[in-house]
Length: 414
Image (tube, rainbow, N blue to C red):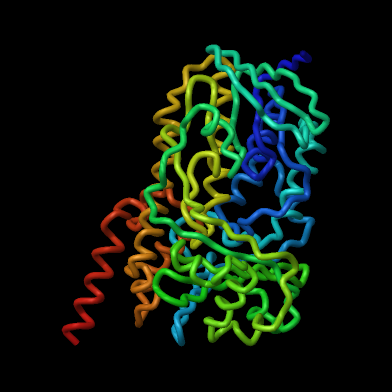
């Protein structure tokens, strides 16, 4: 069997794998990426948040992405009946990027992969990991290509950025249930023929149908728009009697007073996809010789578009720690990787849970707005969930609940 020897093997060529491999290559590490699929490929996760821009910039990927002309995302709008809450990333607490992108992921991921290859990274598509063994500082990964040929890749460290493929969690029995209740989504792209001119036509929006049910609208610069419905798995399953995803998404759009005119009669560009019980978790984020990043580790919920931010945060952090370890330094992976990543995950988990309880929606739509509270929540929605100067990060587990309770009590008393 053919053998290859590298310093770091990255599994998966999505945003997390591209960020980590580009950063490793930039620091003269011998890195190889294997990707099971052939690009371009359809994948969900089209709304980014500003924190990812730090990672693309640091990995040297930003200029190539910027040339693509993706739709700029300057904030996000939440709708509930006649109520509107608009977050502007330029008006947030603390430092950080004021904008990001809304992207067709097939094009975005292809651009990322092309740039990684341009930088000299050995990226092998249509190559599936079939087995792995760890022996201290050496791992042996068996892979199979599209022709059925197998080979061994020996690496001193492995970064699993395999996304929903969750390669190492499956092979090493690391899967565990998510802490979040089961939710599902159905989405498709449409040719946005009824799109309004100006900001209204390009603004990302979340239209709340019920407390736990919401419609996403993500316009792209190519004239298409991603439209999706999210709710409890039971609710999503009941949208169609026979599991017809197109029928289900049509019904969901009809429930949106705001968007039914824009999308009620447009054709879907592909059969709508059903992402069932999408939240996932793992027993641990690292082991002797490997680290898990992105959806290979934790995926929460699409409501605040945190998925790619955790993916690139994990990819960048793992790459930096792997370099130090390869240079002979002893790395505390528990403190510097697992505890660090999980702190941010826990902050966002609170926000997701409080969104579905309705407490966060209470804060979003409360009038008059509290500018200080809004700026701090905006920083969280921008992905700066490690900034403990922000009260809504530092005491996230009580701040939303307590403030929402205060607002509700005030309403009753008035």
